[in-house]
Length: 138
Image (cartoon, rainbow, N blue to C red; front, top):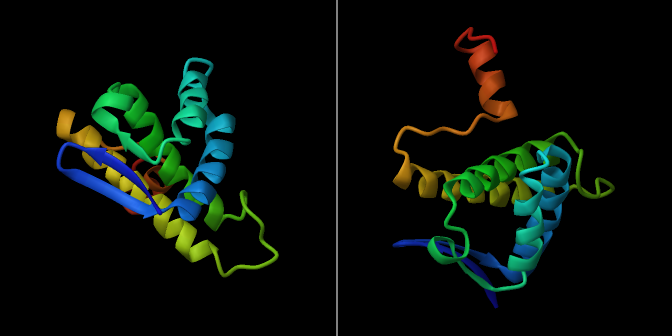
């Protein structure tokens, strides 16, 4: 069985068990990072994740919420890399989960960019890249 995120002609799918693990880590990251206003997105995702098919146009039409989840999936990839979430007694799962988190972040980024073409998420990685490579502070 699979888990599907759909937006117009875009489709992002993974196994149900992979999505289940990914969303547990992402919800943990999101709970810690969310503003009081964004906590409603976390609560809604806890409910929505029970459905194996999420149509973002119907189930998550708010671009603000889409931006939030885009950033949270990217931040989850970073948190796994930094060993802040997940079990780190074994490491076999980390590369796969980082790949899934990052790929899901890219999917959400494409969804947002369909509505706001030049939008880019501000994440730990993008800020670090800009600071080190582009010499841009803040």
